[in-house]
Image (tube, rainbow, N blue to C red; front, side, top):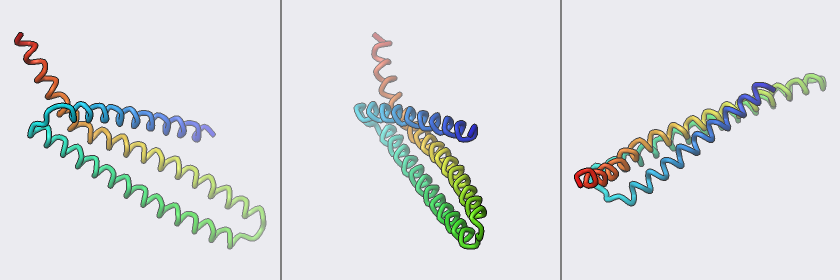
Length: 145
């Protein structure tokens, strides 16, 4: 049970960090969208979009691999069910399968949370650069005044 609670807490923490990062990225994107686009700003925004697409592809690949592994695990469990004779053996197989499926699910959620967090970090890096430039441009006239 402790592992389950710890995994649940870790998952909640990763989800919260991912949400915070995505909100920051959204704010940076809004700031960048309202600022005049320079060539460097356009390039930085393009890099952010490319990084975002790469991250989404990575997440889709991970989910596809998890689906394949999960399907194979279910197939193996059914093979064991068919081969089992006494009811006790069936219950043991079912318990093992349920436990391993839960652990795999929690591990996959943690992995996906990390991927989403990495996605927002990588894509927001370029947007940070874009949003900092207009601020610096706005500060320079004030500094000279």
